[in-house]
Image (tube, one colour):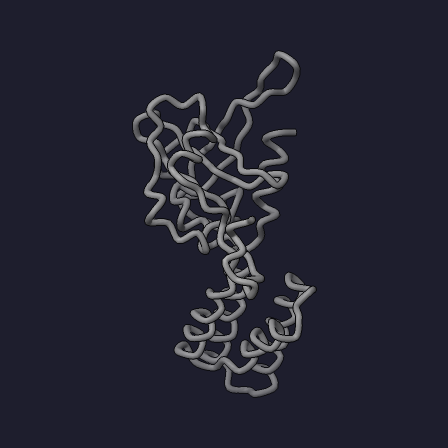
Length: 218
């Protein structure tokens, strides 16, 4: 049984929730700067059409819930809408300390993150910096399975675009060694956010993660 399905009503991923939240922000900003009703209606309809694009198979109940986006005018309404919407987010696959250790069999004295303190509904991947090993560890879902990836990470302060969330923030160069042939290995990587939790909260398209993983394991 898939433990992620904590409720039959859950139908959106973390990245989709973030995308919807961004559309709600556009609506709030429009109400703060525009008084013309037709213009505001246009902004709302455009926002809703963008949501429909990422959720093309909504049922009637789900569409009714998301239609409330068209009624938002004030910040307090936006907060209430997003708070309710969070109940419908499918959590990232829950892991235990033992699971984490199994995903990194070659790591000696692995520094495991605070799993109990994680909100799995706000995760599209798990990432943390191991101060003992001076490595960045990632737990991702790839090709239907959980996968652990360790890499050298440049932890210095650098502003740049994150490969995963596509936002401007403090990033570091993550480089991991992967098998490229029967007995050959190659280093591959790219810049990702130093703060994985913040990255998860800004990520609006899970395909960015999948593209990054395809590049690593091509």
